[in-house]
Amino acid sequence: VCKAHAQFRSLMKTIEEYPKVCRLIEVESSSQADLAKVLGASAVNLERYQQALNEFLEGKRLIIPRFYFVGNNDLLEILGIKNVENMGSIQPHLKSLFQGIVRINVFNGHIVSFQSSVGEVVQLSDPV
Image 1 (cartoon, one colour):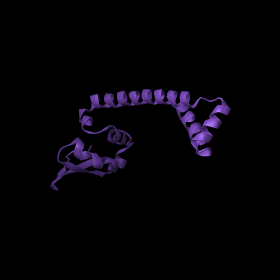
Image 2 (image 1 turned 45 degrees about the horizontal axis):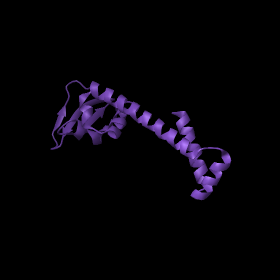
Image 3 (image 1 turned 90 degrees about the vertical axis):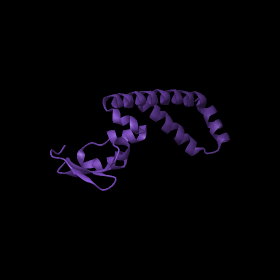
Image 4 (image 1 turned 30 degrees about the vertical axis):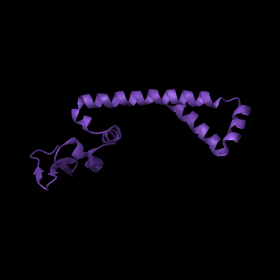
């Protein structure tokens, strides 16, 4: 990942320095760098990274089938929640994960209740 990132940053820096395409081609010729090869290699790397990401997300979906109801970007956001204190970021995804649930309530780091789309609140006897 670091090599692809470094290549991309280097290319973007060159493009920023020489925003006109004709001038960029001149710079490429003088630097012995083959822009087409760099872009081709970057595209191959990005496809590989995308495939690895899809396999990772599929693995999470196999463990928790409800994750099939959310898209990749939303699932990444959900998986990025480090602790229950940040559960506010999961609120927009609850409707996709659980039919009729629109909000969860957290107290002292535990989920203590959830709320339906019609306003009904269900208190959990044992917070999770």
